[in-house]
Length: 244
Image (cartoon, rainbow, N blue to C red; front, side, top):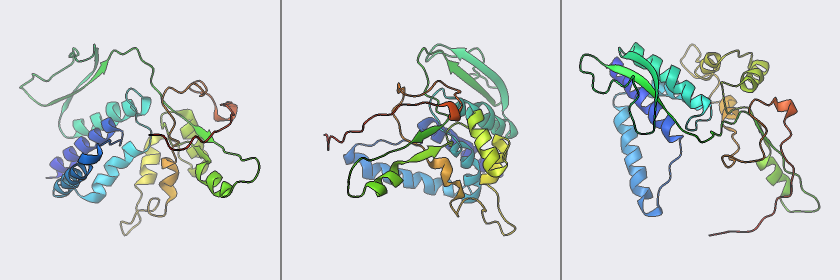
């Protein structure tokens, strides 16, 4: 049962990685979708301890996941693969292939034992791989509720890409964390009674302060830019009302 629990956790992790936690439903199917999700959670709950599930998924939660992004690759190449190997799968490495084709390391036809492998598909599109974001709103003149709006929108976030120096340097200074594994241990830390130390009190909330910007936006600095050197852009925001 323990092995089964871990494998189900891995499957759930992978599902959430690939989905990016984004669910879009048509209005008339939303109730059905919510019901299906609840049923799925209840079914998993029959086999997986909730605390153990949190420990696994909190690793994925550390960073921004977008297809081909460095954090999604890190989670798949290291975290998921490592768990599969511990569960008894033989890892057959990584390979490349054209979209929808099998890579040379593909073991889907193998019958001698269980295998894991990673396939990278050849694509020519760029990947939006955010490392750091800062958004500041200022208001000229009188505007009712301006300060509340500013407090709601202004954000500075390093909670995007744990593989970047900007992320590690920030959390090293804040919490003395020197690696991705250190951050994961910090998130999952418990006291002698099994109570989480850095989660329920909201300390981990900074990781989820992610500004929702459009992908492939043209006003970001080049990847790897030190946050202190980032220029970004400044411009006027115009409210155009509700659009349907």
